[in-house]
Length: 292
Image (cartoon, rainbow, N blue to C red):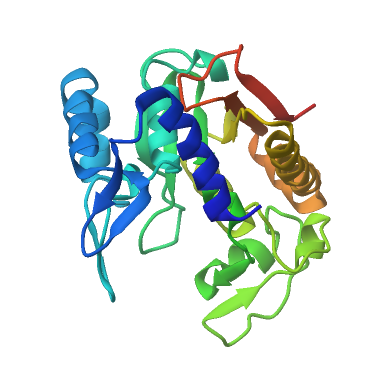
């Protein structure tokens, strides 16, 4: 399954509920797997009036989720207008509360998590639940990208420095601007991964920098798994998530990740919302991917 096929299946389910008229964002060309400009404007107005704090977070967030993007080839639609937007999914899943993740109280969206001693743009987590110290990273069609563990050199000492918290060997710093960590370090033997390990390492470092060492925290990965009408489509989707779960279990159980999370009192969880369309996460539509 490709990213475009995945997006198309999500749109197909949405069309069955909403009709076809509210899709197709038009700029220099039409983007069929995005909501239309008019439908997206209604979505934003509803967010402003009903979930104003969430709107302010997304409006001011470094991801620019609500704004049209300008790239080398001209303008593209706002990220959150995509039918498979992870920020849209995060908002819809958690805007009415995080009881589906065992959390309580209001959810903060677009949560900065700066790593101690590291300058530049801080890692951004999709959501944070202060009452239970639950940090949430949300993924949708990003699992179809090819991910590699390529880190900026400023992270070297945190990963390979003396007494690093991952238990990795102390190595002389390379002279390049970036360095690569092989997937075998995380119990995998793949050329690329569905799970973004580089981002995961930054999130772990950011959480460890923010919390008090003796207090527990939880990092939850939340994925969207569409419930599909036909057996063939559902079988293909099941295969995708079976592979994703295999990666997550291998990575989370790898020696450096286990050492870091135990040292910093961070619990890891991965769940998927299994529903026809994106909706509030609850125990009824939640699938556990890790632990199982």
